[in-house]
Image (cartoon, rainbow, N blue to C red):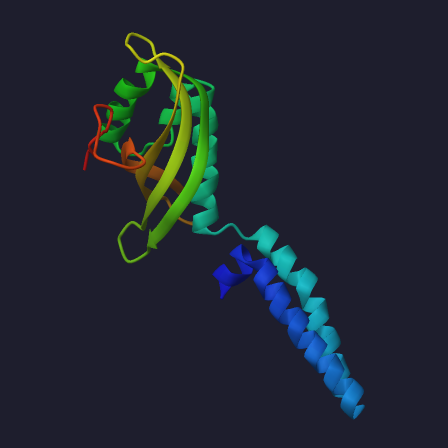
Length: 190
């Protein structure tokens, strides 16, 4: 229920609006005051739903925020800031070798296909399947000024607890959006 309130306030507002409308219609038909009061209470819950939605950050929303912050760091060629999101030393080393090879002009999150939160694992993990669009050049290589979409699979892990908890990448793999792996496809470290 909390996920519904936090991530889908529009849907919940529509349901509350429909309930309020039905109750007010019922009051108009029957003239019973408690039905009208219930309808007004349902209407008053709509702004409350939006306020609660703004004040709660779900795991899914936290992961999306981290993804966008990292894309901004990659686009700015700020490799140190981009590497801070990686919590696994081997994965950080892999990305630390890979990122400096390229000069990024653009790095945008295309679409996040799926985020699966795995709360049953200890610590909790999330698997993310997404696409990114990059405008990139190799610093020492044949690729110059190429715009290319890539598919990116990430495994996040929740580190810490309470307000200090944060999501970090522990493994990643990028590959072509469609087709077989190419020469730039990475293998996950794990």
